[in-house]
Length: 224
Image (cartoon, rainbow, N blue to C red; front, side, top):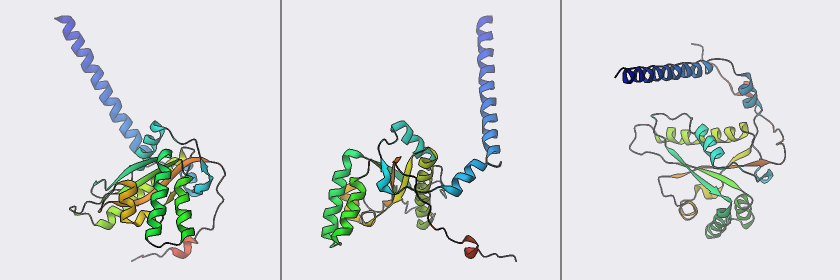
């Protein structure tokens, strides 16, 4: 009996220690969010998307991709609706999706050269994550704010991939905005739609810097 009591007390102390360590860890994480992070700031100041034609294999494996998607899911989401989801498009599916895009482009009377370029985006891809906006029409949160959340996920996924050492870019194209293509290629129906196709792979060329806006010219202040 004494041994059982001793064992129970030990388990209790271990549980208390684990709980205390968890609280300390949560505190440290919270404190880190209010401390300077020069490396993160430098990354955000210099981040640059990679042209899709410069991305090649290898791509993140399943575990690495889940980590990137987990980071992307830590995006602003008013009302905690999670108005988005992910469809991972792997290399074997690219030809089918490119063919569906060509067929739909012809049906819509799109310029052949533009359709060919849009299809090439998938033909050359090794891994694409379609960020699917899944708005909740019953929610009190305005639909536009749910759209903004899906867009934030796209950017967060690109930045997560870049921070992990991969090349990445966020694209759309006419297929992203066409209900029939989305139905045939991705199996989604309204009110869902594509917020973005995020291409991820190994960058073969450092992306060149491009002109950036004059931020001071875009800023106004309200002081009273």
